[in-house]
Image 1 (cartoon, helix red, strand yellow):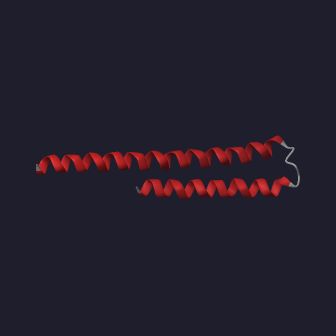
Image 2 (cartoon, one colour):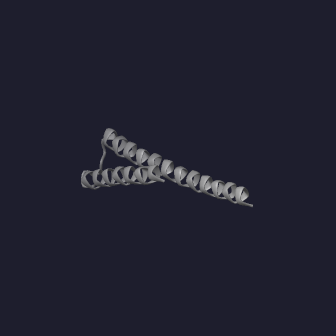
Image 3 (cartoon, one colour):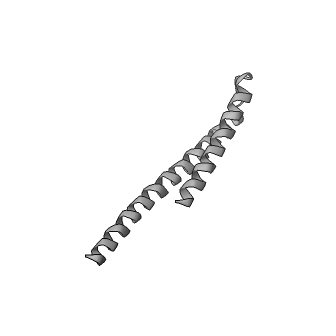
Length: 76
């Protein structure tokens, strides 16, 4: 679960950086391809971190439910 929180923080940090760069370059119309590629790479990193966080949450839930059933079967 801790990994999911860390991934969420990293995702938010990358999203914030990408949004900040988009705002600064909006008035210039961002015609330089390298500027757009850099912002897009930050957005991809944010999406990757977000997907890792979601995967860790799902894995945590599955393992918790599995552990609960194992514990119940040991008691019964």
